[in-house]
Length: 609
Image 1 (cartoon, helix red, strand yellow):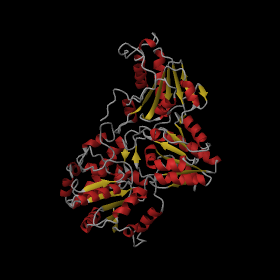
Image 2 (tube, one colour; image 1 turned 90 degrees about the vertical axis):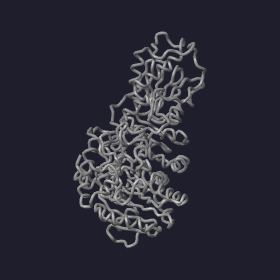
Image 3 (cartoon, helix red, strand yellow; image 1 turned 30 degrees about the horizontal axis):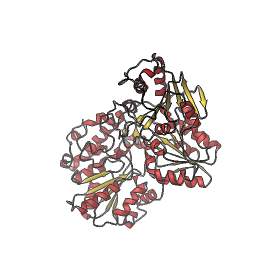
Image 4 (tube, helix red, strand yellow; image 1 turned 90 degrees about the horizontal axis):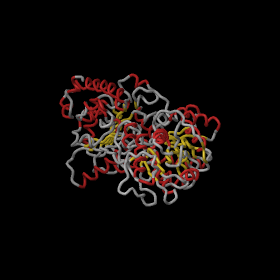
């Protein structure tokens, strides 16, 4: 490790350095980040852009006595370097290692742990109100927002409150690099561009009641420090407008026009389901002039960039505004178009009301495509897309599909845009695996394996591969196994219930939360007396780690499914075929359990820290 950075283990060490050494510190930080993040994967461009800004923040403010809140916490890596976590970067975003976002369990300097945008200003508003009510000590509250976060409506709800409270000083630091993943669009980014170019002498923030300082050159430490000190002395709501460059100081990031290396991943380069979706969407766009697309500030990550390039004017980036994206799509459908909204599964949580009451209730033909469904891996609990099936199972007039492979993604997308009402498709962040062909189709249900009537494994989407692995092992042990993929998982199809009939045990497998998920809906739809075991993710906030590690911990592998079936077989005792080989012996006298649906269960040996 370079000499200056090695001497900084707490903010006091940074403040003790003379100003003329700070450019060298900034250079060392950039070298450190490039080396560590390229090796492990993570957010690179957004952190390279805030090096000088973070140095200034920790020299002017005394964390944790002064509260520093990072909106969209992927820009907090430099903050972590200054707060005792340099050595932990060797295990950045790995299981049991350093989180890629602020985490209060890691450090007292991380006040909030969150990875969704446009929230920090609301935290700041609440903390300022609390501090006023309990006669606070005068310490500062600083919220850093940017990288597209100011395009979110929630940020403006907070600004509406903050600007009116002259006696509650909050410092809003706007990290303005003109981008989210891609360049930001809309009236607010246009206004910020006018302020940057000094074409406007009055800021919108002043109209909302803030004092405004800027634009400040965001890579000049002295200038940032001076503005921050002035903001603190004002003792009122202040916006400090810092102009930065995403990826600053690293040529490959500065030259990457798509997202300035917003995120880097370790070498691999395999095609993904996102690529498959992108290609199929473009093909559909060629034959359907009424097909339009909507993204919430993430055209590249969700696969919409190619569609927007091929069909200018038919792709709309609405900013970090999932609620607006869904409600606007209802308007597009009302106007006679077929909108496809592509967002991460975790961000669908933000638009529950709009999907329920603006789309589903009115049966608007909107197709929602959820990328990163299930376990996403190293981004951690705020990014796992594991609640979508449980949420969507409560929606009437909504059809939900889960493709198991690239060909099914193409099929279901084509079917979705032909439906008379709304549809949702979900798929994980994973490579585009080989297609898993069916041996038979019953209604809309694909049968992937069939050797008997003992066990029916119902594979929800990407769990099909693990179910087939389990079927092979269980068949070798004497179980008669059928594996079915419903394709359209909600509502439960008659074809699936036809397959359930006559099976001794039904096991549903999904990479969503098991409580209230698709498996629970299937269990409820089965006839009384049907023995159902639901496998899925626990009702817990699952920490970061690789997708493979976390799925294995949840028992959602071939071996995990086999263990679950063996355990259920063990409880049947003498009622089970004598040829079956038990691993778990029958309890007590081996009598059969009472008829009825087995309750939602979790893998017994699962532990979460």
